[in-house]
Image (cartoon, rainbow, N blue to C red):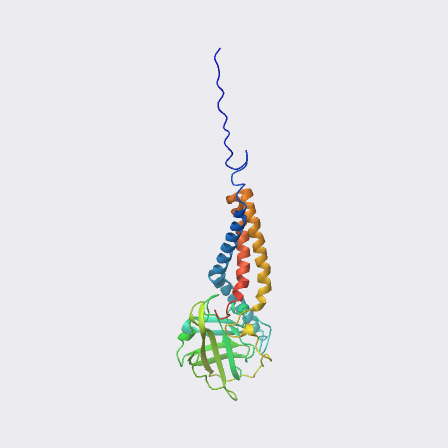
Length: 299
């Protein structure tokens, strides 16, 4: 009789930790926290860069087109605001061909309003009316509509259209901190000041002003918002009302990142990122949108 040999039994432990366990299902518990932290950081960085960069530019362009359609309808129906109105409402069209600028001006100057385009300071009169009107816009973020206003030269003219017609302004000069201010207009005189951040883009070191005088007939005043200007509408102010939604969105991002870190251990990397990346990206953009409102409004 021929003896048969029994093959040796492999008694080495299963590399996955348990017989038959799918690959990628187990791992050190400490990786959960690390994975969640990295997911949160990546989502925040991606969302913030996109928000103040390409997505911010696209948002500005969309809002500019929508605002122009709204203002054009108001001008055609003679319903454009002539005085104080709700924040974010289109009130004027600003055209400066020398720097390729054609923007809809909205009421108020908070970070949220200036993300859509230039804003009108509510404690000043509208362009074309007696007194000083102030328009503020961003230097770099969300399309940077006022990026080149400091390039305007003395004597150059530009146009502002409101519900009271077309108003032509002549540039008096560019002014920075320490430079003398123009004389306060009296009687029927009217001035317009354009304001934006000064210095390196996204790293402002002050405010630059462009002063211009009205050369067309002055119109009747529609008044201005009474009281002191809110801090979030002042030059380089931040929109503190964004803190509450920011905390809520950040909590949602934290929970989603923790859930995905757990899912990565259970499902594996490929399946988790296939499902989780769109969720983290959306939440990261929501957090970044609110965080951007806390930055200086002229950024």
